[in-house]
Length: 304
Image 1 (tube, rainbow, N blue to C red):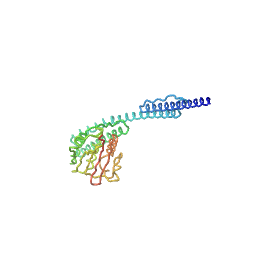
Image 2: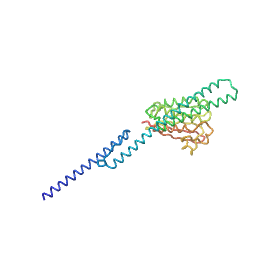
Image 3: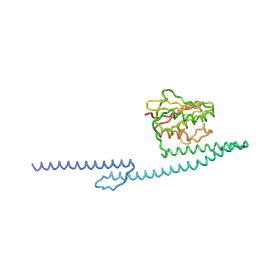
Image 4: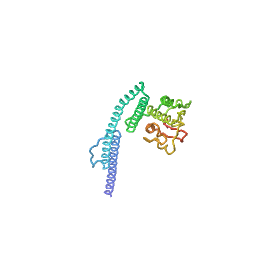
């Protein structure tokens, strides 16, 4: 009887020891996996030599997976550096020739030229400006898409940014006798939202440029801010040609241009850039329009 009691005590002790040992081993493995995850998240993970008698097969496989991921991350970083260099080279190498073309075109316009020669010079100047806009748009879009240029949204007042954008487009609007109005009241004077000030102004400039381009002479374009509890809405509204319902989902695509505007100047990159900027800072964009009645492009920015 006494022997059975001793045996039972030993079995219980052995069971407790085994449970403790397996629990400790499981805890050590999970702790090690957690450390590996932390290193991977910080980009400092390095593959080590693992003893299969001490670490589980899952841990070893996970190590190999993280090692492969680390290599992929390094390769991606190297490719991003190459793209960054390429974009910088394109921007640098094209800016000087374009600036010279525009300079010499301006000098020629000041000379006394025959009517046909003046027409050629004006056409050359317009095409050079179009090319400059196109290259700038490509560079900006490429930088955003590849993450070379990161958006840094912070809390800012909305109206100062909109005022600068409207002022920058006044000359273009005046050339078509289009009135551009920034609508505000007491509720929006100090309205704040979370956005990247420089790039959101770029987005609004593109929306205004688009509105002016497709609004007939003598038309109107307005910019309005509407505050909500959790977000702020910016509307750019025009009374231009409008957009059909089937095309509204397509206008934010790269290089997309509808049949109605195929004769107008443009390359179909402006609205695509706007969407990249707004979505990249956590906002979203929508359009409401009816053909012949104008369009409203609405930007929604977080205000908390």
